[in-house]
Structures are given as structure tokens and as C-alpha cells.
Length: 531
Image 1 (cartoon, helix red, strand yellow):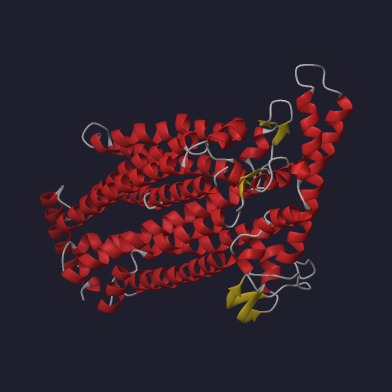
Image 2 (image 1 turned 135 degrees about the horizontal axis):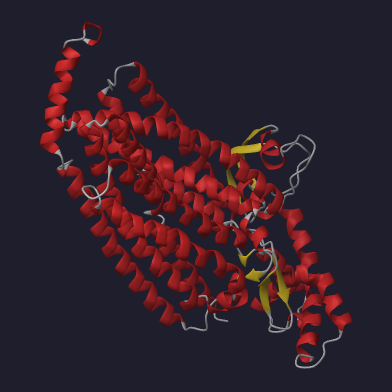
């Protein structure tokens, strides 16, 4: 296998996945925020809330359309660039993707049309139900996608068949309720809610700085800050759950996040800052916080977290054991078409959990049974991901997460207890912070995906074996094509969003203005609210 094909295929999938995820979090969050605004409209019958719902709903629609376009092309790559992966684990990975398409996406796509074109054809309550179904469909889509991804991180409910040479589904229940997938889902969805909240907050702050659409902006800030504060707090709590799951089920990723080269006595300390030196196997200028990593990774003060050196040594043992599994698999293949010796199958089952580690040797030798001690050591060393990108991506992501709590908490306090009066410095800050949630979200995916290398499916299928039989030129050509296409889509997205943000709310303007004038007159007649 030409390793250039592997690297280019990884780069292409990373580029398309990270680009697609520019749209996903905003879609998840705006769908819920718009549904909340419409709920207030139905409860109060105030036109300002109808106008808010339509305006933010329009921005949701633009983002939704671009998200669908980029998501569909991304899934094509499983057949284009990752054909052996699709063959090897398609029985398991394909199921949640199919359910996502048949249930969640169809639900979302069907009702989003009713939502946009049903304002004058449905009653207020019927339209509200449609809005919540759109939000539900968006979140269901995320659920099934993340179940599929979670299985790649922590494969459960499946078993390798040495006769068909494929992974086969054993328990769909285990796949669906995979702890890594469930933790990833709630954490990702909450991050999407924060992204949308910061977006609404920033755009509304921009309106207030310019003295435009003041009533819409102030109410939008009230909704975004309350929803965003709850979401930002949940991201931290649910992120802790993801950390615990990584400590339990993805030990090498956890060690890489912490740049923990050697196993520390329990409870392990947390490295706040430092500079990981992978060649020297040390973290220079490290600042440690005692006990914290032990609590995050094990939720105890007595359990240790294994370091990279110890995990690499364990991987070497697994590579050696996996060679035995590979040998047994080869013998089973030789008997295929006849009655396979049951004793051979039983012996294979004893060693099958290490087969994936033997496949790491395929990068260095055609037949793992012929591997030298040096090649075995190199395969074991491959199980250690490049540490510094994971180390820093995690810390920047967490730092931004705590920053969102402070930001949302401040605006919630001003909206709730200071009559929605916001200092100009705070409004400028809210505008400047708009890109930050996307940065945090993309860094989170870098931690999740980069941290499980060299595996496409952890401990089962190495990335180097998962690609299609293509040439470097073919992959480079499609990579260039995707980059051009996605750049064009990005320009369209930004252009449309900026156009309609500058334009502001343009529906129900006269009705809203008449109601607001009447509302001000009513307030003027109530001395207790006169300022």
C-alpha cells in the first residue's frame, strides 16, 4: 500500500468533515432556539416574537441547506476513498447511517419545508409542532451519526468472522447504547447549542451597536444568553463524562491528551500547560494540578491512569499475540469451502481481540507472521498518536468552553437584572467572539479523531488498510475538487448570511411596529416601569 494514498485520503476526509461541521452545530442550536422563540410567540401572541422566529429561522434555513449539501458529499467518500473500510465493517457502520437517513433526515427535511411555507396554511399551534419536529429531526440526525462514529472509537456489539473476513453485527442494542457514543452525542449537541447561542448573541449585539432592530436584538439576547448559559454549563459537565469514558475505553487517547508519558501513582495530576516533546518522551515546563486528572479519568483517588510508555509496551504484547490470531485466521481461510475445524475456530476466538494489532504490521511486511522484532516494535510505536496537536487542541477547547460560561453568564445577568442594558464594550466583545465556538468545535473533533490514530476502528482495523486501491494522483485530484467545491459553498454561505443579517428582519414589519408602538404606550401608563 502506498502510504501517500493513506495520508491524502485522511486529509481529504478531514477537510470535508471539518468543513461540514461548520454547519452542523449552528443547525442543531438554531433549530432549538427558533422553536423556543416560536413557543413564546404562540403563548403570548406578540408579533415581535413571530418576527424574531422568522428572521432567525431564515438564517437557520440557509445554514441547513449548505449543511445538507456538504454532508451528502462527505458520505460518498466511504465508497470512494475507504472501500476496504466499508467492506470490512459495513454491516455495523451502515446500520446507524441508514437509520439516520430514513428516520431522522427524512423527518427533518420533510418538516423544514412545512415550517417555511406553512405560516399561512397551518394554525399557530400546528406550525409550532412542525418547528419542534424540525429541531427533533436535527438532533436525531446527530444521534445516529455519532452512534456510528462512537462505534469506530469503541467497537462493541460486533464480532469478526474469519470465514467471510468481515465484522458482523452481534448486538444492535450494544451499538446503540455504546457509552462512548452516548457521551459524544450529548457533548456534541450541547456544543451546538452554545454555537448557536453565541451566534445569536453576537448578531444581536451588532444590531444594538448600530441602533438597529433594538427590540428584536434585546429579546434575542435574553433568549440566547439563558439558553447559552445552560448549554455552556452542560458542555463542561458532559465533557467530564467524555473524559471518564476516554479513561475507561480509550486509554491511549487519554494519555495523549494529558501528555502522560509514564504511569503516575494514583491520583494522577492534571497538566495545565506544558510543551510535549515526543522524541524525548517528556513534557517540558509543565504546570501540574494535583489529583485532578485522576478524578477526571477514573473518578477516584486510588486508580492509576496508564502512561504512554506502559500502553505502548502492552500494544507490543498485543501485536505478538495478534500474530497468532492472524496465523489461525489464515488456516481457517485455507479450509474455507469445506467444514472448518471447530477447534480452529475456538482457538481463533481466544486470540481474535488482538488481530487488529497484528494488522498494524501490514504497513511493514506483507505477512505479519514473517515480522521481525524491529517491525513488531515499530507497529507498537504506531499506536502512539502525535501528542502535541491533541494536547493543545484539548486545552484551547476547554479554555474557550469556560470563557463561554463567563460570557453567557454576564449577558444573562444584564438581561435579567439590569433591564437589558448592555455596555458597548460587552457588545463589541460579543461580536468578536462569534467565531470562537466553531474553533472549539473543530478542535474537539481533532482531539476525537486524531487521538485514535492509527486506527479507523479502534483496535480492529488500522487506517493504513482501510483505503481504496487508488493512485496518489487520483486522490489528489478529488481532494483538489472537493477543496474547490467547498470553498465555493463557503463563499455562498457567508455571502447569504451576511446579506440577510445586514438586511435584518423584513417580514411582518408594519404589524410589529404597530404593536411595539401600542406596547410602549401601555408601558408609559404604568408608573412602576417608567424609567
